[in-house]
Amino acid sequence: MENASPKPAGRSARKRRQRRHPLYRVRTILATLFFLCITALLLDFSGTLHAYLGWMARVQFLPAVMALHVGIIVGLLVLTLVFGRIYCSVICPLGVMQDGVSRLHSLTRKHRFSYSPAKTWLRWGVVAVFVGLLVAGFTGVAALLAPYSSYGRIVQNLLQPVYIGANNLLARAAEHYDSYAFYTQDVWIRSGLVFAVAVVSLLVVGVLAYRNGRTYCNTLCPVGTVLGFFARFSLFKVHIDKDDCVSCGLCTKNCKAAAIDPVTHDIDYTRCVTCGTCLGHCAHHAMHYSRLRKPAPKLAAAGAPAPSASDSATAAPDAGRRTFLVAAALATSAAALAQEKKKVDGGLAVIEDKQLPARTTPLTPPGSLSVRNMNQHCTACQLCVGQCPNHVLRPSTSLDSFMQPVMQFDRGFCRPECTRCSEVCPTDAIRPISLDLKSAIHIGHAVWVRDNCVPVTNGHACGNCERHCPTGAILMVPLKSDEPDGLQIPTVDEMRCIGCGACEYVCPSRPFSAIYVEGHEQHRFD
Image 1 (cartoon, one colour):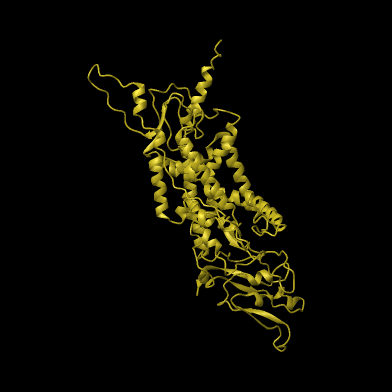
Image 2: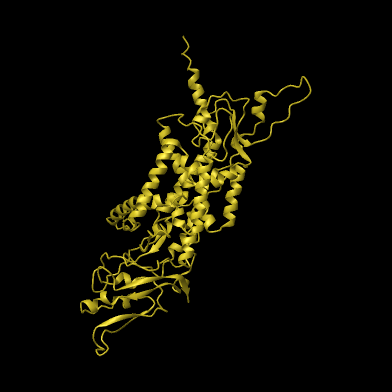
């Protein structure tokens, strides 16, 4: 019997080159877990997942810096000094998203990358502009370049409406079986401008990743540039054994960071994100992820045997045993919190959409301390906006607080029993507060507009604002002093008003409320 024709040597060589390295496997598993969990955290509107996954938002680099969480900052820097820029390829959701988009292109076009010199002047120029905006107080504008914030806006504005729509379908289907495991939620665009920013961010990052891999990460991202500086001194690095390298160039053609020079066999560690892709494509085992040691001095004695290539490969530490171990605590909630959505009937009129008042001072949530504190610490990740159950928070369109949360009361008011935004904020721009403390925080005060009030304009009794004020700060008094039993109008006790917006929300006057809340620059505590 004739032997079957042997397989071409090239095919076996390609299989060897495409064998996944242990570093690549571990990194991919951890990156996938981080990405899915933090995406679920940003999509969740019930607040259930925050108890389990909220720490993933706090370990992001920029939120930790803005919150001055020294322990987290030091931990991330130590992680970088030991293993390289694994933050960018494992923990950062925007970085993992770039890898996913780039991989889509790699399915149809193999070995498509090439080496390019680092644009150092542009990278540090972006960092300088970023720091300048932070110092000048334009934190919201600076957040346009922040990776975690950019991904948060993409999820909140583009994916969460789809997620809520699917939830509403499940809720309606469950009603037919007398199940209330799901409850419906309004689907709406909180800010057209911020929605456009999210679309542009997705297009820019997506196109750059699809065409050139990590271009955004290694050119425009300030976090990547800063961590790249420390990665130069990392203990473990990907390096090339020049004695075993045959200059096939496969490592360069598969490096989405464009960090491997095929001529000099040098690796730019400021751009390398330790993804491990190049290691799996080296058919001659000339690439290793290990502690980079200086070459041993050559023996002066003649006739000393030179170490063989096999001995070098044996002495080289196993890269699979050098990969990092990251603890990831995952848990799933039993069910979403089932509750009926509370609505206010408005008393004498049906609640309809109304035009927002022009506030002299913006309203920031209880726990934010002041407008200035919010501007200085908020990274505009939109996590609190997407989690607000009362639809009070939405992104600001003002330049000094661009995309940061402000309060509006056309869809609800800030209920005294809710502290969700202070619980989920990863930067402490909104400090954690208790329910008792929230009722004692004065974020603003109500202002009555006589020309809009129903008793004045229509001659009908109302009193909605007084009935729904949770602090009793509104008192009805006669419209005419000589008619004590006639129509009544509201007066506001500013010392008792906490600025919750209940009066503004239930006011039946259209298109503008007859009573609205003006914010306080500095919150007052009783």
